[in-house]
Image (tube, rainbow, N blue to C red; front, side, top):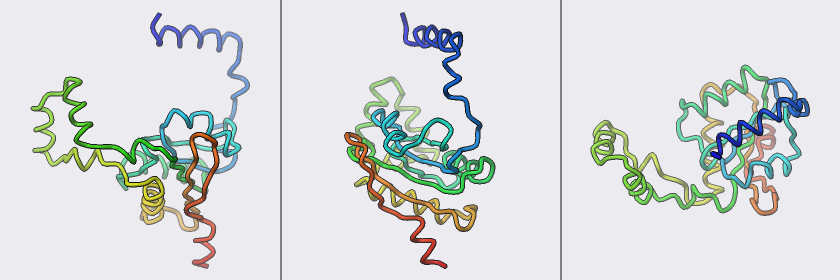
Length: 192
């Protein structure tokens, strides 16, 4: 049986038994927060538990490394939607130790892309179109640097509402311990 078949079989039971009722909530985050974090599998359940969030408490955006690299890309658009349309009024960027983005090697990944069947012609076309894959596939040197860069990108965004605290944290994926690396409250007090 394929994984998709197993998912659909489980889902049928889940719906028939009304197990979804335990997760009913609105689309608006009860704690009025947006979390931007990594897609790392270790954080799927650990991060909400370590931060004391349950279903309906926060909006969560997940991507590789909890990095926003484009100020007008889809991740930043999601941040704006959360702030302007979904009642979020605070943002926390949460990176983690042992992140794959800290060791991302663009050349190794491009070789993997080729090995998995993407032709050299496609790669050449992208490069000739101005897409520099080695730049696009870059990570960061350390997790704290990655978190702070994303926090700064959000804080400097021209569409960010005034007085929205933007925090940065790092979570230990083994224990769930959190470290505050950028306190958005302190920064707002300093500007008052």
